[in-house]
Length: 227
Image 1 (cartoon, rainbow, N blue to C red):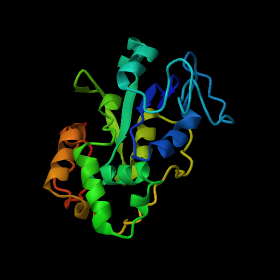
Image 2 (cartoon, rainbow, N blue to C red; image 1 turned 135 degrees about the vertical axis):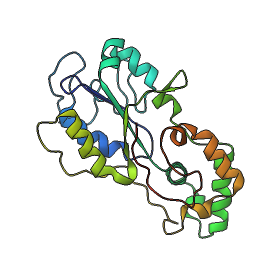
Image 3 (spheres, rainbow, N blue to C red; image 1 turned 90 degrees about the vertical axis):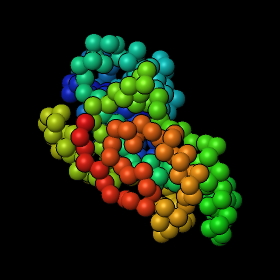
Image 4 (cartoon, rainbow, N blue to C red; image 1 turned 30 degrees about the horizontal axis):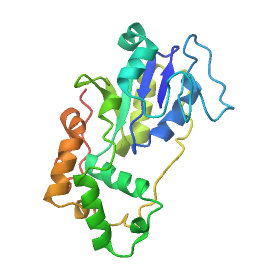
């Protein structure tokens, strides 16, 4: 998905498993049609312009790559609009993605943590998850100018709203697509061994390079935003 506003001149690039759908819904009242400043019809649950959600015409789709957004939006708007995304501790994000993708599988409901952990480590090493590199990178360059941290969701969204000059307050942040992790009380670091840890460090390199998340899954400190 991509959320766009000509009125407030922003582009939100939606990454996976970072509360992106909740952020998207919070941004709906401030999004506009692509060719003017008119607000979207929020009575519809799917949008083909302004917010691409679900099957959409004209090449828009959920989690659309940044290069395609730039092409559809046009270079002038792309260069002048404020571009932001959402990020999350990569080790936590990959665990969440595992349970989301495997939510209908027996392994996600297994009573054996050893079995779950073994499947998760294979999931990392293969890898079997989207890295979102294409959503935030063009020609190996990180194109977002700011980010909402999953761990500071409300505060960062308010900060972005203030920066963009929203004329009305944000509504309470809704929750969508929130996964239910059977082993949610287990520390994230317990899922990893050296091979799976190294795999996540490699595949999610863009997050580590642009944000100060620790490369040790035992370290859950929240990085400062320094973009």
